[in-house]
Length: 274
Image (tube, rainbow, N blue to C red):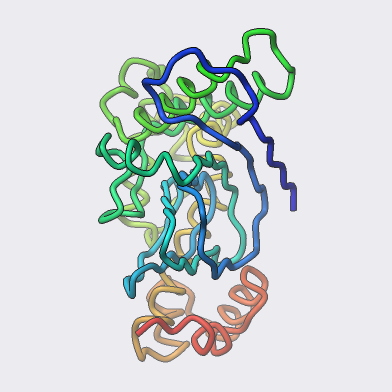
């Protein structure tokens, strides 16, 4: 697991318009399940993977790309099915009122998908590059602005039209079609040809848009479906395997344990949220 957190509260500010970021960080390959209160207000960008998020007796399914929010005074239980990649911005508790007034820190909807993946990912990289290189331009105001821009632009699917190439637009449409029907069999070499791309070009654009390979993307979605069915239904393991187009329940159990570190039965006992 690659983990980093950088304290930036000490950077000087000249403006008071935006909420002030106190820390930024990332956890790549995160496996940890958190069960705790936070004294801070947090935005977590889940850019790869899937899992659960529970607060105030409500349980939410998380499928990357998604944004999670946490705020002071309540307990959160959340984490990945297997592992996920997460970037986060932390604001001090006293920023809660200002954050809530913006409408973007909506505690009634603490788990939201985000659509401008490439755009948001570039902004996240810019924030970390600015801080890690100790740029002379890394004022607190500039960091606050970049972080807020990432938060504001992440849900804006229409803004992608301005930044995606024709090939990237094709990938975007394909990704959403596959997300709606991940059980269908896909031959990505044939699909690349149909889209007028060499497979290497197709794969490069796909990874840029989703963060993972085509096969890993489908595998992660199928795993998420299996986890949801295990925790929310009484379907047998073989029935769940069939739901994600795996006809051999033994193979499904091996696949599931390799991905999660638990057998389907162990997962059901641990994560049954009914």
